[in-house]
Image (cartoon, rainbow, N blue to C red; front, side, top):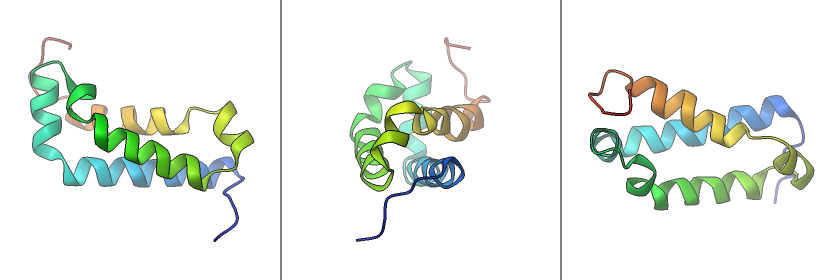
Length: 89
């Protein structure tokens, strides 16, 4: 097994890659989740799987003191779907 990621730059890159994959493979779910104001429920399994992958690959001390994964979800998934009609924005 590879050594854990221990630099912020690499952790951010991994988080953004995982978020991009979630976005790419779940477009319909994301749009429906935003439209119905239940995005996090709609993607709960995918987000949990992504978070677990991220946690498994990042050094524990870096994982515990940063929110790179959550920020990647906002930056990659939510911001890119700002055009979707929703009551939340």
